[in-house]
Length: 243
Ligand code: G3P
Ligand code: MG
Image 1 (cartoon, protein in one colour):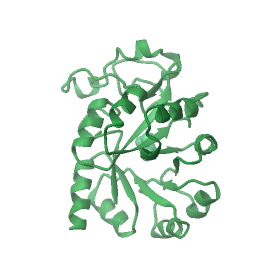
Image 2 (cartoon, protein in one colour):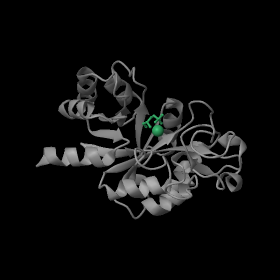
Image 3 (cartoon, rainbow, N blue to C red):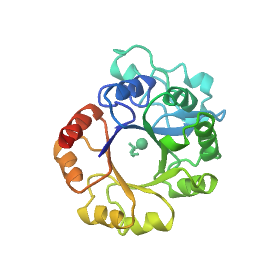
């Protein structure tokens, strides 16, 4: 079972920052999950919320701020500055680093609240520029976005992202729309859904697995990956099961 660091090693470091990504890689985890959006000037940036208020010392919508303005805000401010200044990374900055890592990157296209024109194309262009095509999985709560991505790049893996309610007959659905992966919230996931996905050859990567009981459960059900704020704990536990 693969372990993905959710927004990087976000349990211990400021989420979606290069620091959180480097620290995740140090844990020996298999992959990193991150979120992408577009700034006012069309730069693909790595950030979870549509506004910068919660995760930086700035305010406003990502779509209304240029990257030149955005990079001045501190993503470590919410941690009291204990790690030093951390900017919101561009996705290109991430790709430059990731091309030399043995990591799978789960790129979540954040188009569920605001549909950024061209986010799929711009993100894909960077993936191709850095030769990461075989080391990424695109996902989105907005399945129009991954359908669009599939149309542009049928060879790249895509995952249908669902909230904790999940989706009945998820394996059939993913197969029908050529999504190779199903990414459900852990709370409502059932063995039946995992079995249904397996029946259709769909990989199941579950988010956000932050407690041991859930980790054991999804492992027993045969899930393919967990997305966790604590990749170190999950990876050590998964390795112990392989011994
Ligand atoms: O991709 C899994 C997970 O990140 C989805 O939820 O809100 O943390 O982006 P969220
Ligand atoms: Mg996400």
